[in-house]
Each structure stands twice: as C-alpha cells, then as structure tokens.
Length: 291
Image 1 (tube, rainbow, N blue to C red):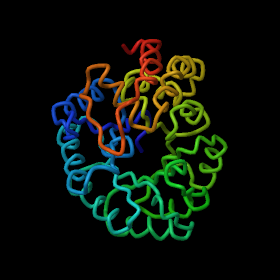
Image 2 (cartoon, helix red, strand yellow):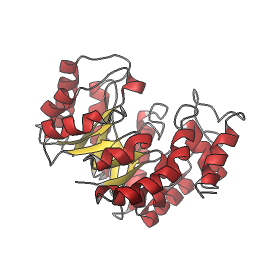
Image 3 (cartoon, rainbow, N blue to C red):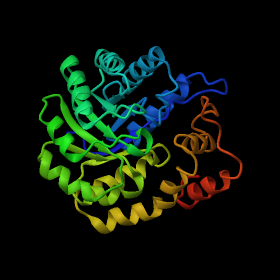
Image 4 (tube, rainbow, N blue to C red):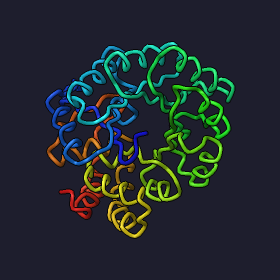
C-alpha cells in the first residue's frame, strides 16, 4: 500500500500549450528528492480533460520513464466512457505504471449501479491496481461509501481518493472497506485531519509547490504525531486555499511558473491566472517560505 504525500502532478506546457519534456523531468526529479511517496500523472491537475488520448498515454509513459523506479507512478486513466477508461488504463499498464487512478464518470451522472458496473468492467479488463476517485464537486456524481465497499471486494481495486472534504466518511469507509483498502484524501485543506483519523495519505495539489513540507506533514500525521503534523499544515493552510482561488490547475501552474519550475502554458478552456488573484497566490507562497 502506498502511503503519504502523493502529488497530483501538473502537466507542464510551453506558451503554445505543448507538453514541456524538460520541465516534466525537472518536476519528477524534484519529487524524488523531496520524498514524495508517489506521482499521479495526467490526473485532473495534469489537465487530463484537454490532452487527447495519444498525448495522455505518452505523458504517463514518459513520467514512468523519468521516474525510473525511483518513485511509484500512478496513471490518471478515468473517463466518462467506459471503453475509453479501459483504453487509458491499458496504456498505463503497458507503460509500466504502478497503479491507475480512475475518476468517476463525469457529466453523464451514472447511478450507483452504473458506477459499480463501470469500475468492474475496467477492473476485469486491465491487470493493474486501481484506485477509485470520488470528486463530486467536479463530476456531479458522488460515489457513496457503500458503493466503494462493494467495489473494494474486487481484487484489482485497491483504494479510493475521496475529495468530498467530508471527514465523517473516513471512519465509515474504513469500517466498510477494511484495514487493507487504501483511503486517500483528495482535499488538501482537510488532508491532515483525514490522515489523523485513519486515512493513508493525500493525493495533493499543494505538493506541486511544497513537496518537502507535504511529505513531512504526511509522515507526522501517519505516525499519529498530531502537534507536528498540525504545525506544518497550519503553515501551508494559506497555500491550500490560494491554489483554489480559480479552477485547479490554474493557480498551481501559475505558482510553479512564479517559482521558475515550469513555463506559462495551459490549455483552453483553462486560462492563465487573472492578475487580480496573482498577489494572493504569491503572498501565500511567500508566507509558507516557498519563494
């Protein structure tokens, strides 16, 4: 089981919106050195919605190649078409990814029975550990704990990223799914408490800009060291908030550009962070000692 700070890595791009391979290599090295527990390639933060299928597979494969076994790589392979999700998950498996992260089908709002059928189909089709991803704020679809528990009985489904921010779900999920099922927070603002209540880590946006601090916070929280974990998290709290002043990954890409770690590329319909919000993100980074 992967535990700790797992970065939801951006896909760095140049000003034309083309994937920047040199920046990607730089970011992978940064996370290896910082002690990040794993890298998610081409998740929501990696602009999975604007990369075409060929690019999607290529970025996962390149991230695996750059990681070179130094850190596990999880391919973001969810889609609102089951057939597409199977194709992307197969790409991740063939590229040598350690696991796949599958967001619940978005926009078409499947029922709980539909969610079970969808994820069962992917799990039966592709031999790779699979992590479910529940983020109703973006998908208009909420995978209920009871649905997660049913899917947890499938051999290849090994965990859940829960981005509801509902801390009451941690205990319920643990009761339903058992001790060997990985439960990750997908909400940086509540991630520390999520782990202190029994979660296994955070799949994090903030880790893009504060990799070392997030790794330290997660280690402390998983060890039950509340005072230390909370102290680090309190320092990062303004960063957690600032990185969502506009839709993710707009603020985090701007922040990484400000830190000199990537260029200013992003793909429509996402746009560059508006000038009115830039001072708040810069102030949060400075306050946390990140710039």
